[in-house]
View (cartoon, rainbow, N blue to C red):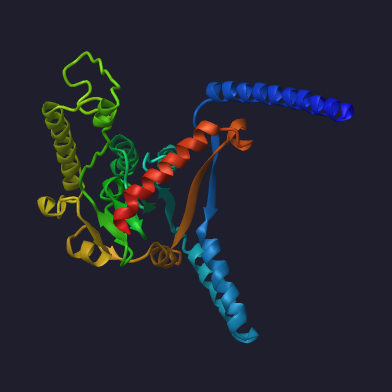
Length: 340
């Protein structure tokens, strides 16, 4: 029994030391992470032509006999030699991906990818954005949209492909494209603004719990979760929503003048075919179809900015980040349930 107690004490002391060391390492990593220049990472570039070529060649080897395969390879080599001799350069297509959450977190990567593209892209080239987002925070998606505006301002053609959803803030981004391609059953639209929050004031009052909100400025806090909301506060909050909606409508109308903006800016959503009829999109086509078609006449480069992970993230000790992700996932499910 004495041995077991001693052993338990030894384990407890060892565990305490290990926890202390781990805390110190996390603290050091956190300090390094704060001091590290944001955006520290590297750009990964993959040539999609090689991917499509490998798919085709694998199928050809399985289907064609040796003589036909040999003929095809000769014809391809001959055509490539002729192209080089004539000095014809293929145009470049830069492929970007944006998978948006409620905070448009992918903007941090998008901004670096756009900067890289604009360092060498010309008006003869093209940027293709594969966009998937059900929207989120206005200011976050406003910044994401601004990154795409940089492409338009540089005179580089921008095509946006939507295979699943580009709604609300997602459509704010999509509308910047000179062309919007949509899969037949993709969801588009939701040009509106929504805000919702619970209020537990009556519950607190029932249990004789006071909650005070002190502000400097008449409209510093219009609605509150715990305090008693006033009609004046509600009116101001609604006014702010209307102002934001008007800005959203004007933004979309600027980049899609062919739209009947008052007709489509109702917060409604449409599937691809209906979105085409409403002129929310220009053509029904998946991103796979578009890129596979382009691969024959252009060089396709997929860009991905990979950020370095901090030590707490690598060891799974970012508890706050984990909780944050759980809450965001919960909110996204709630928010996107309207699309199901």
